[in-house]
Image (cartoon, rainbow, N blue to C red; front, side, top):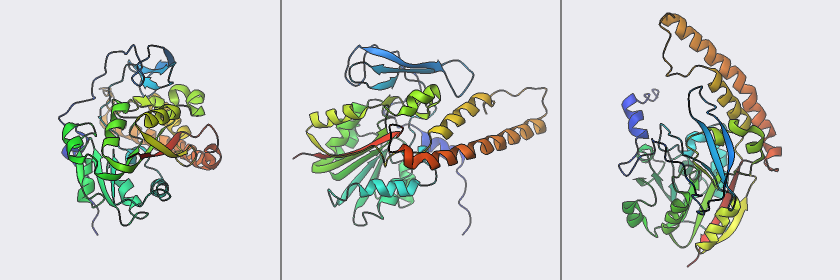
Length: 343
């Protein structure tokens, strides 16, 4: 079989293009209140230069003193409006973790229809189908990647947009037995609105499956600005587990399972090192020095790239080696919630 053609620049741009409903490319004004509970009791959790570059701007992360919600304040600009979970977590073991998440529903339901929100290229539905072979999987994503997922046969229906978009909300209301969101609330501009809209897509008695980054992870305090969730501009919100549980109960759901072990993603140390290397190495879009010949610049770039890979490989191995022990402690960096929508 011939190798798959590499996507063109035009296709990559189309894949990452934000729908016409809005854009997240520009930073917002600084907030004086919590975006989750509205409290004005804010405290600085992290204020540091941008770990990725030496230019202006930086990581400004606040936490609410009342509900402990953690958020970028103001939200930083990101070159991409969304970052699908299948790209964020793309490392060995991804398919196995997807299958484990799909198995979390086995004690509670045998779904006929399942919507994966923030599905990206649809790798979760493709893996989950091996666990739920009689389930119809659809995908919803803010980018056009979901349409490529449909073309590849990973989802049956592709919907471009967000759950709260009026056309999506009207067309998909009360349609699904299961709705899943994997590392999607971290990236939603308004996570409470996203959560409520997702529940509207469930039938009465349906189940919501959420996995998201845990702001109470001990790595957050240990690594500070170098923690991957702190260092990414597309993590505007980190929702504590008690806040999510309280919101689900207030919306009439029954929480049937929580898990802080299995959803752990072993990337904290390697992610911190990658941020540190990005800080040291020249940015790819930095202007070239006119005095340096082009062949010399290309050779230097190759050498630096190989050195980065050589440095990152041991950190990746260490993350994976420590994962079985860390996921049993407060160093676990993610949690899972399964909730049933009452009739």
